[in-house]
Length: 207
Ligand code: PCA
Image (cartoon, rainbow, N blue to C red; front, top):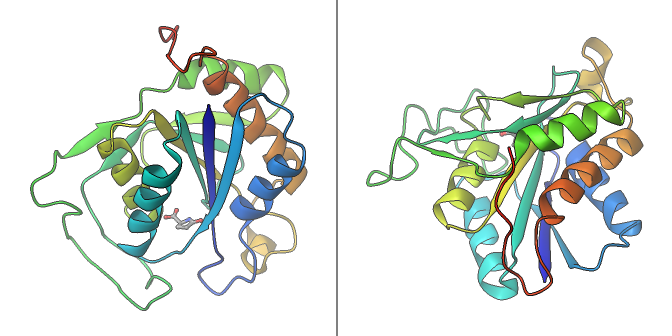
């Protein structure tokens, strides 16, 4: 049974992205029975989704968790919704700046993650890690990746994480230590992957 966990490369003038730093930390401490595959996605519309789809085709994961940075928030945001919209506030890392564009002209307006987000939220809260369920993953590359993930039909979801101390924009925004972010991702994964039985089928969602 394979779990695919992704982070993103830096963007927006930063030299690091806490999503990828935290994903690497989770991988370093991995002691669950599933095989963990990690990848760093480009912050480029189209390319990020293509890479995710290629990883899914190659590894056939039972669970996919994508992680991205959402500066300005103080907590981990368990994303519930991906919308069929690309509307960038800043250019992506290739300079593309889509506005008011559908991600998939033939796709549904939105997909909902079917992961037990509230169960994860309860466990995060118990662990003292600030978290919430979020109803918008934005309209930038993270949302596009979540949309592609949910469209693929593979069980999966997305977590947005705060800036880490030391990032340029962190001077004026809330931060979370990468170790804490990594612990939170692991708690979420324990909740989601704990529901994969040994034969790779899923127990009913309890939330
Ligand atoms: N955050 C951006 C894209 C990459 C990342 O880490 C977003 O929220 O869309």
